[in-house]
Image (cartoon, rainbow, N blue to C red; front, top):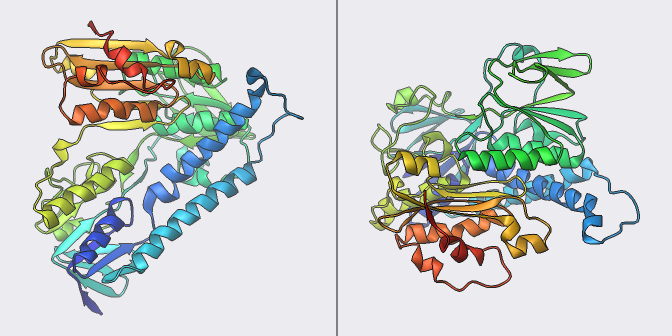
Length: 458
């Protein structure tokens, strides 16, 4: 059975449904194919469920701190993990159903469930059906990377996806991986009541960040009782009678860490290994990432790659921007490019880290003459009032152009406040534009102009 379309979209992650709907509304006949759950990583195992659980963990943390605010509870707070999971599942299901319903109700758009594989540059097979189109968009996302560490094949473990099915508090969770995903789960489960140990191969946590950011986050986690082991150069795992043993081979402390459960959070890999990309002439790198140009076109004419599988962002917001770039070029005559994008993301520990642009280290290596401003959250009134004064704000400015190169806002509301600086960066305006702005009091953002007024050569 053969079916002809104007466009085929493979995958229903953040970029896919938006692009498919836009093409259909432009009068094209479109097929969108999904082999698993509609909505992709963000809806099912990523942003939405994890941040829902982070919210539950934050509520638990506040409940246990109620006395700090002069609030007396009738009894000791308790975490009901079955209720936490049920809340998360309800929110995920509502979002997934919303995406599914929207696709199904869009005229000219067919939602097809099944595993898509290329037969040629213009043909995709889904089960018995052969779909053909002159334009094909690959939006297959990624999954947790499971490294070939000794003992892993004989040891039970969770990834960021499988841990979504947990409805109990692990007595001792060992997290292998001290970067963004691992740290969010580490703090979350510590607040739910687990003993938690984080094992990281690098000398410090989240090594892509500046050292002061890394050290501050480590301090935040350790103050909550999370054990952190860095410099774990030769990690192996094995089963024990009570759970799992992780051999960390660290320079300090016991080389063996025994826990009840293991979470692997050591990076992600693209879902490109079973698509038949070679039949379409689509080039990938050694990791399986699809190579794309500045407008997200692959090496094969008529085929584009969006989202995590193209290695140009790996965030929900960058995947959506991929859709915007492709749609602008194809439908609007607007030559938008990936390189117009400024790096921005957040780490959702509490307090969160909001990041935009270059780190101080990156800016220095790039040869910029720097002005740097830094203010601890203990000097931010709104943070003190809320009893959440950990962290700091830092901004990096080019001393010659006066443009903001990057910012790190580690503190209450940091994931929102960073946009004050990000928007000025997109405007290519000097830092003085926001320095002279009058912000609302009392807020965290009102200290951004003050921070900019305290820039020093660095």
